[in-house]
Length: 339
Ligand SMILES: NC(=O)C1=CN([C@@H]2O[C@H](COP(=O)(O)OP(=O)(O)OC[C@H]3O[C@@H](n4cnc5c(N)ncnc54)[C@H](OP(=O)(O)O)[C@@H]3O)[C@@H](O)[C@H]2O)C=CC1
Ligand SMILES: O=C(CO)COP(=O)(O)O
Image 1 (cartoon, helix red, strand yellow):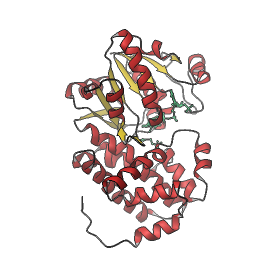
Image 2 (cartoon, rainbow, N blue to C red):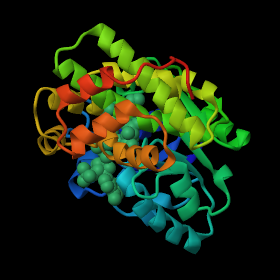
Image 3 (cartoon, protein in one colour):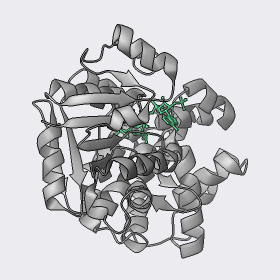
């Protein structure tokens, strides 16, 4: 058992925090919206993010980061990518005062545009320079809505330190969520981040009325380009993409209406604007941000990522979906397996 600070009280932070308390840990949730913290403390609900669900009543919520970190052995980041660096800087300042060295776990799935950094790189840079062993990433096919209902779920926990991955595996596993350790930290993170872009594409196809063949083709070719980016730029192991954070997470996110990325794509396929869709969903749609980083990387490093590039053009350059599909299907013929 451990004292765990969960940073981010949206859907996944609330559900993970509640699950960790169910597991017998001493959990506190940190969030930046006072009304959400108050609702959690008074009613054990978080209605905007998780409808018809109650948290474990032993999970308090606070807007005070210093209080949340007090005595924490594990700090779990479940923030949107755009907030991770901001909050990590604050965490570092607090740890400088207390001298504590908690394990940092990230459940955030994204790549930061501009820096093109993975979340573990941001945490290493901001909190533990030169010591990425203190970072563990958890990633796999897991929707907050399913875990809240205690549906059966499997997730990878990855670290360059086997000992730290095992510590997280031991604390986080229970009889409905099974964690598997993995030593390919960057591979696990790339899979979790870039599948969100492919999930937007999968939603667009449904919004446009395409069927199962199109979905299967997209997911398979999507995985090929995720693997290419992971292996060529981040130095990931190819096998990782056959695992929970690769094909596993791609399957759930590209086929489930629980996925915000898939739902965003579907609405775009139906002709809605990106601004309307993001406003309407009211929760983080990570693929819409990560695609910017993927576009920068594909261009700068000359990595062939036709689906992600098409999604970038549709979201940010007003490209027409039908034209993009036509162009993609008309590209030069090529072999299936190509790094
Ligand atoms: N939901 C899920 O099923 C899963 C989500 N994830 C990943 O977890 C991460 C979080 O997702 P999720 O919980 O779903 O997101 P939500 O949109 O449900 O919640 C995110 C929360 O973080 C808050 N936030 C934003 N900026 C800050 C900040 N600077 N400090 C503190 N809190 C902040 C948001 O507030 P505000 O609304 O004001 O911005 C919101 O309350 C994402 O990377 C996602 O990909 C991974 C697996 C499953
Ligand atoms: O990562 C997820 C499931 O594993 C959550 O996906 P969405 O962010 O698309 O809802």
